[in-house]
Image 1 (cartoon, one colour):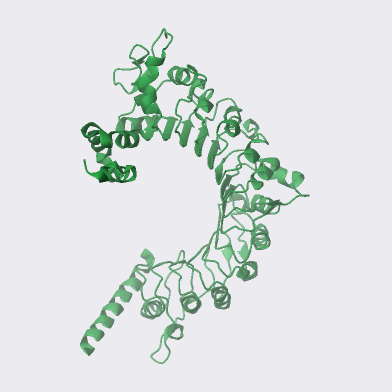
Image 2: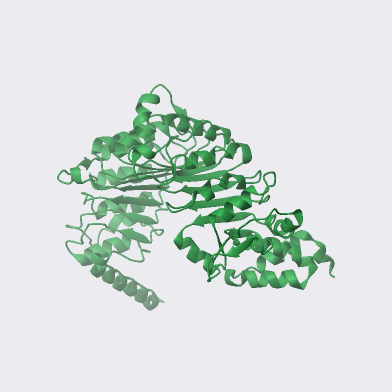
Length: 515
């Protein structure tokens, strides 16, 4: 045997490479495991590393302990009556169980279809409980680092009343979704075990679905502060001010996704949190979803983000311009100007405001110009954004590093001359969405559009609800001069795009003719 085959790291690299493409991974790994003892252990580790359900492990137990629950062999269940097991019964099971590092266990019809694709077996509720409770002092999957649990309203309680025993000291990622109609304390009961069994968990995503607001129970106060190693937190669970305060104490939390629905928790922020400001000292990325922009304003008013790089706010319903202006003001006041690089705001439609058009003026954006390192800004709203060419110029000068700028709203008053400012002062801008007025576009032989400045990075541009009114040839010439590398335009601008293609062909002909 070549000496290179004695190096564990080299063997692992060979095994990892042989799993590509994915469709051939299992047969290749099996062949490696059966061909040479040198490759056997690494190949088996890779083969068992990620499991969808516990079906394959159950099939490693003696056949008198389990049986197929249907003729299709897609589901296994506990055989009754269950006899007492011996250490020998579990020997083969444990050989493979210690290799499992990722487990997805979901009780959902769509997941069952996926299990068939992976030739997995669905494990029944009684068998699931028996597996986790038959050896109370034994860790079923001692190497488990990722655990995904997902249940529906039809899920048996035998799954979630013992699921916490899968938590182990090596668990670093937990993704859990509780059923809609289960006991309202299901999620909290499971999470209560997390700090004790998996204190070093780094990523937690917990989703709690409820039909009624009264069904929602707040997450116990002591859980989140105890997870000192937590780096990512997300989900749609009920957070009180105390829960939010617990998150703010985590020294390593860099990413948080907070989904607030039906004003849960937000209404309490004003009463519980007015005397205290929560400082998220390590947080770099924040994503939130709330009911209204006023809720977002309430949340930001009690928080401070000195290291935040990205913020994304989404509301279910539209709000008035005053609430949006308040949110922009709080982003300015609560985030470090030299660090924040991305701001994304999206507000939904509100039938109660359908007959009233609210305006957002350039003054609301002006306070954000202090974020000189901003690379991405997006605003999607039904409100009308009032931006003239001077406002666009001021914005372009303030955000010279801008790479992404999207305004999705009813038409504004900016013209193509305003876009020329973006071409001049934002050389890295590669994605643009904005409404423009094109009437009166001027292109002459004496004046180069945009003063001769152009942006060669921009390839994607959308004009939303704008139409190319006026001389389409002049519009095309202007756009081609300031953005010479755009690859496409909206469908309603197809005639302008066709002219741009002709202009580019003519330019190429001139180059060849001059040689």
